[in-house]
Each structure stands twice: as C-alpha cells, then as structure tokens.
Picture 1: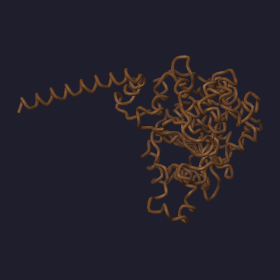
Picture 2: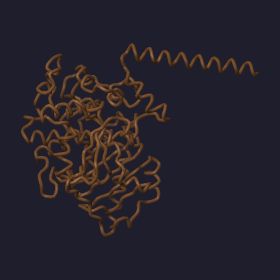
Picture 3: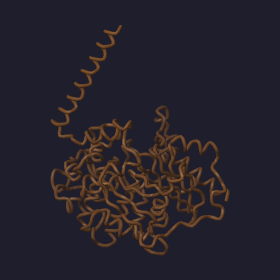
Length: 412
C-alpha cells in the first residue's frame, strides 16, 4: 500500500512538473505573458476570475474628489422601510456589497453588509463603458470631436486600412463595429482576458480585424470602448482620467477619490472596465443620466447627445431581432411601467435610472444573476417572443432590484 501511494505521488509530481513546463513553453512561444499575471491573481489566490477589489493589483490613476463635494440628502423616512426578507436574502445570495435607493434627490434606503463598505470603492467593470460614452458626448459638445459619425481612423491611424476605415465612433458606441474581438469572461486566451491582465492595450485593440459589416449587428465587445478611450486621449490631449476629473468628477461634486486602472505604470486607462468609486458617487452618474445631462441646473452633457445615448440603436441583434436592449453604451429596458436606462458591470454593478419615476438604484456586489433568454420551446412562438422581447439579454436581477426599489419608495 505504501509503495502504491509513493508511486501515485511521484506520478502526480511528474505530471505537475510537465504541466508547468508546457504552460511556460506555450506562454513564451505565443507571447501571452499576461497569463502569468492572470494565473497569479486568480487561481493562485483561490479565485476563478477578476474581483471588485482588484484596484491594488494594477497601476492606477487617482481622480481626486471634487473641490466642492455635493453630499446626498437623506429622506425623512431614511431606512425606516426595509426590503422583504426574501428580497434581502436574494441580495445576500449574490454577494451584494451596496444597495442604494434614491427618490428625487434624497436617499430613501441604503444597505451595506459591512459598515466600512459605505466608503469602499468598487470596480464598476463594464458600467465604466457608460462613463466613457458620456465623456465622448462632452468632447463632441466642446468641438474636440466633430460628430458621432466621424471615422475612428481620424484618431487612430491603424484604422485607415484593412476595412477598418469604415468604422465610425457611432459603430463603436452601438457595439456594432464588426471587429473580431472575443468577449469572454471564461476563456483565458480571449482578448478580454488579455485586456484585463495585459500591458499593451493599444497594441491589442489595433490588431483587431473586421469580420462583419460595421453598423449592422449588435455584438457586445469591450474592445470597442477601449478604442473610444484612445479616441478621447487623441481628441482632448489628456488622459481619460484627467478629462473625467475635469468634466464629470468636479461638476458632479463627487465626494470621494475615484480610481482608474491602467495597463501599466503611467500607461493607458482600461477604458472598457476599471473605474472605481463609492456607491454614493456612482449614484451621481445615475443622476446625470436621469436628468438628461443636467446636474443642479448646470448642463454637463448636451440634451441632443443624451437623447441619442438613451435611444436603442437602429440595428439588429445577433438573434436577428430588432435591437430593444442597447443605446450608445447604455442598456435600455422597456419595463411595462416605465423606460429604464442602466449602466451594467460584470459582477452586477448597476446604476439603474427610471426618469419617469425620479428613481435611481445603485447595486454593487460580487455576482450577478443570469440573463433572460427566450426558452427554447418558445422560439417558434411569435406571440410569446413579441411579449417578452423587451426582457431578452437583460440580467434577471435587474428586474428584482427594480421591484425592491419601487416597493421601498412606494411605502414612504
């Protein structure tokens, strides 16, 4: 028995050594050195992917809180009404770290499982994309960018050849660029993984090839937003963080320092994913969208641009349906009660706005629920599809958070 165990352990050791050697050979031959960082920051830390508190794992730029912060007011009934037990259990099951409900300009309810979480910054993940879209709108308003229909190649020379010269800023914002970026949260060899753990974002996005006609089909790709980040740098002559500090952080009166991850020291912002802020400051971004670009009587983003951002892009989805889910880097949900616009991040980072109800809901946390899909058995039922098409590809938890928020403000 002892000999068998020793033989097994020896075989296991040899197998492990072989795997490590093969892994290193693959990394060197493929040039995918980012895999070392990815493996160290995930599997060797007991995790399967990125986390909401990854800030210190990467270089970053600090966006200082506004010189004149604008704290939220609290409702007279603040936190006197609580979510139902089942709803609170649901939020806890997904690792919610912050849940904030605002009616008008007042906080009605907020929940943090830990006291310190209120002031803790969280990665917004892809909710960051909407921030970049707002900055693009401001740059257009200022004349630094001519229009949404300007060619990407006007700012990124590599996009003046190989079919990429057709791609416009609008195509990027619509998520309809036609590029071959692989959007995967599980494949370590995808562009998504390399963009998060790699050190050369510019090289990565300028190596993309056109595989479909731009402006036709919705295909969600983080590389589109990263390209917009480089457009912003070229158009404004400033880093994305510096431009955001000036045009969003200051006028919105953000109360705490925010942070933006870089691909390397003094490098480029990960425009597609990695803006870190508190729940209270994320809510200020929601207010900017809720108020169509106005904050406290001051115009931050033009009404014209906000109208375009909020309207579903006139393209088809990958399923061949009319796009009812996405504007210009902003999710759109046609709820039976009101139209809803929201920012969305990988782990369930949501800034939900319902203009008709003056409602803002911010949810931060470690996980999100699955997306809604038409059941396979209903795919030929046109009536069912028509009734439920408005829900397709929206996260199921968004519907739940909307219900919870509405219940809390209705019981005031």
